[in-house]
Length: 258
Image 1 (tube, helix red, strand yellow):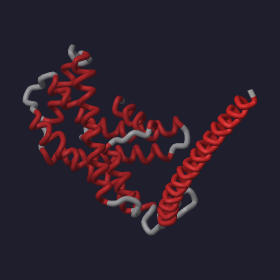
Image 2 (cartoon, helix red, strand yellow):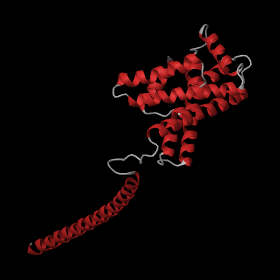
Image 3 (cartoon, rainbow, N blue to C red):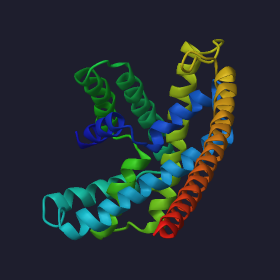
């Protein structure tokens, strides 16, 4: 239930989940809208951002806050971390990671199809409910639950074991499940052979040219604005000099009459 709520909040607020980006960016690359280098950099940044957020929650909120300090919460957290990391084999976590992100990315896909809040929430909820019920491995969820087990001194659990069995196989499985089994499949099903969609009524190539020309025009406008500003300042200075000269001349004429 908590995992479904988390994904609902992520999608509705427009923030990034690394496992969801495996589908989105793969579709963008296959549709020639994104380079492979940009896709990989996005994967890295979202992974590190999700890891930093999860470790912050464990090390600052849940751990020192004592949320899981007493039973039965402590016992369940330790049992969950042990069941996820200590007992299963590497290939088992990898295969469960494929199934997990296949369902998570389907939840993202169904959430996009909803046109109102209730439809989006229902579309997201059921695939996530399925992967949690089946015990599949989600690398972003492991970023929270396994470090929490480390915080609670779960027996047999170490940082090295978490990296080897909690990050590597789950991450690779999530990439295959989200990028290949979901992203590539949906692209082939709906977008293969189609031209890139228009942006603001323009094709992708025309949009890039328009964006480049607009940026160039903005630079020219900025330069012209700066020149006009300098001209206005020069005119103001000339007017001030003229006014001061006129006041001096009028003042000298008045003194001569006296």
